[in-house]
Image (tube, rainbow, N blue to C red):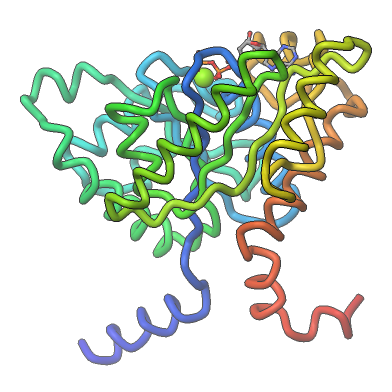
Length: 287
Ligand SMILES: Nc1ncnc2c1ncn2[C@@H]1O[C@H](COP(=O)(O)OP(=O)(O)OP(=O)(O)O)[C@@H](O)[C@H]1O
Ligand SMILES: [Mg+2]
């Protein structure tokens, strides 16, 4: 009986494939990480991926408005301290493919004398639990800065997306960011840069466009996402509601489509698209 059970688990694991862990990161605060996470998680879920959006920012309020119920105040930090059943700490949303793990209470860690060196193992446990839950992608929103918890989270991921404001400082801060990530890899982390994504681009503004152009010239081809996120008031409205921009109106505004394109690009960059092909070898016959 026992062997039978074990066998079944192995089969499930083989059919679902490994979960892909993706994090955002930025040196500076307020560059649009959380906005990206909420909108990208939504687009990926709409495209059929089973997504868990994890808020690792103690100040963060990701997705509680996305959730069907906000009664759970526990989340990521409780998981770090106690581990345990992932299902208890994730909240469902109106999209069946999208689940959210709120940040929970950072104080839980502080009070319990928990130490950050325990975090890598817990993160590995979280990803394994997500895999057994049948999830395809775990997307981590991080606090600004590449130290402390954000460093630990990025190091635990397969890929990191770097949102970058289109401002003159970017010419210096992007190389610095890439050096930091190279150091993480030298220290043994497997994390790869999925891409640099320009945010809050003012499409009519000469400076904003010039920085975008200079960055594209300066960086290796394809390191930057083709798409960029424009600065628009609709993103402020969406943040105030805590929802993806697609859900702010009955008919999604055009900027919602940008995240579908970013999601499609990300699928190529991370190998998710190839994984889908492998899992659905006959899809083309059914189209
Ligand atoms: N493309 C955009 N256009 C206009 N406003 C935006 C855009 N993206 C984000 N914002 C606004 O800028 C502010 C910061 O965005 P957001 O919270 O996504 O950044 P963040 O990088 O997560 O910040 P933090 O580092 O504090 O976590 C929010 O008020 C948000 O509504
Ligand atoms: Mg944020």
